[in-house]
Length: 312
Image (cartoon, rainbow, N blue to C red; front, side, top):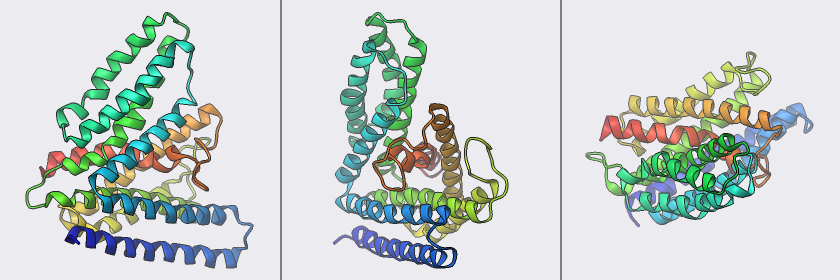
């Protein structure tokens, strides 16, 4: 067993300990407030769903590069499907959609797996952006053409391009940071963003008073501040996983968490525009893949490029 695998197992044990603490906290709040409190019930449902996701994600990390790429390729596929069900489409777009799912998505993850940075950083925002509108135009239906094309392009950027930057962290080479520890950098990003989100939800419902965007999201400035602060503390405690200093890890964690929370607000606005509460109902208590990874989607490319610019 390599040292990185051993550390991942210890990280899994520690995460399980933290999840156990959150579970006990929820049970204590249940006992005090009763089982009819919707905020506590939602919190507990999210914690239960997190148990399954923690196990799945840890297995992918232990398997290594192939496991991580396959996990996020599947996540991109599921997220893209959820996103496109909310968009305007015509029969003329069927070929473009098929290309997005079965050509562009696998090619993007192939480039990430081959560590071809010059391709996976420009393939979708340049070549796919130019190709798919041409394909749709050749089908000869101008009805809401701009809306249809823009929605498809944004779906690819969000669900494929941004998410693919999570496994792309494996290709970053930092001096003095072993190559096989890229999985630890991924674990760091996911943990600080997701725990920041969970604690933002908890504190926002407990102490939050000022909504950031009334009418769109229940997220509050107080909850966001508490979530970002907690993410920074968690990041500092997990600095050993990264090539960052303790303060650098705290700063990167806080920034990733903050960007992710604003991403959550963006997707809340999209859902409100479409008149839905969740993107789907695949994950109990969490909605769909888009609901679960909305913060990671926004945080991943920012975290990737800052790491590359500052530390490489």
